[in-house]
Length: 104
Image 1 (cartoon, rainbow, N blue to C red):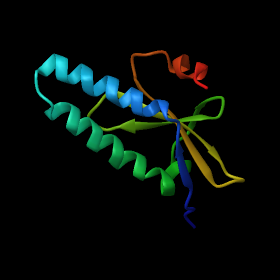
Image 2 (image 1 turned 30 degrees about the vertical axis):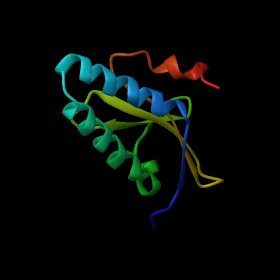
Image 3 (image 1 turned 135 degrees about the horizontal axis):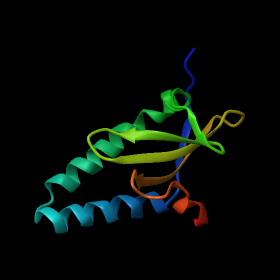
Image 4 (image 1 turned 90 degrees about the vertical axis):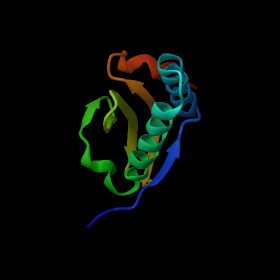
């Protein structure tokens, strides 16, 4: 039986996304790659309400959701008791995965 989780987003993920969109715009001179990134992130994050437990725990209680076609991972945790998924960060795979832990 599949569970339906509520998904909560740390407001900092919007800064993660914007930083990436800005980088792609600087590198390419247009907005197309940034738009594709945003669309892909939204599509993948929508899946978490049904598939949050599908991905293994990578460290502490954090799971990674890959963002296809981009070298990024959404870092999230699952609270099965409250049926809640908390998306904490969207980070490039070359970055230290602990970088978001200082967020409040």
